[in-house]
Length: 401
Image 1 (cartoon, one colour):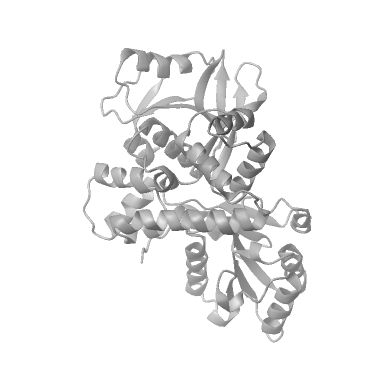
Image 2 (image 1 turned 135 degrees about the vertical axis):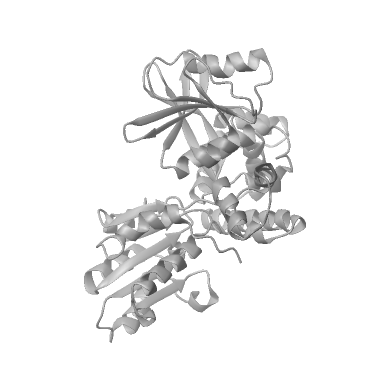
């Protein structure tokens, strides 16, 4: 089993321990949320909290599958806590499996001396009507699959000697889901396929009563093959029609929204850098983990500019940036990354292997008239930095930025 302490997350959570606020960890299934809860529990035990005062329920487990509603959860927790005198620490894993869970959590906060941590595999976990019960009472901490830096750390801590490029090539092929570090080559792809199918069935088809799962699966193939490209529901509908499949743009948008809710994909909006307006059409979609692209299309060893862009997009999310794509004078900026008063403009490509490519990647950034950092990222090992624009080799960027 992988044994990596994810300090970047723990350092965010530690200051929140014993604060009167619910800690909400969200992210795709199997990205490491349950492990994070266990690391927090270890932290509590190290601080002298009794194990008997730490209550952990995983609603994916058969032990707790009989708890389906907030009333059943209330009864279960009230029984456990009725004789507890000291503060208790409540951990609820995959809380979205309980209908009306927000009512229960709100009630526990009011009725008991407790500190609460929850996880969920739905990006809209806190956006429903019931979430108004928790307004001002929670902080959300997104959890992502392992970064390249974390995977390198794992190999180092477990004395597995591999070069940066060997590790990076594996990362390109299979992504960063933690369990993959313990599997051999044959089983990695099988695991990714099984997990993708499980998420699609449980968190999309069943949850939203999708009438045409085949179209949904074809749509995910299309998204995976077209990472880094802007498109609309109409353009996808037209593409499907040419393939003999009639499906409306609205249906496709609904399916994309369901997959976004299931944390499979991220929708990224465009903004005009001249007018500063967010544009209402032609978004991009990125996969939460590019390993699913390999599972769906077996193509992570080609169109590497697309894979690199997906990797860099997710890396900027990990670093706490909000990301859009940019348009300036009908030309595209791959990623505009904002955090507080910081902003970074990024262009991503596989190789700067021609004069035309260099002019394209650096030239678009030169059109931006502000003093925020501008970066070009590629696999080149020669430093092409110029005109105040920093060039990074992608491995150096992922390890050092």
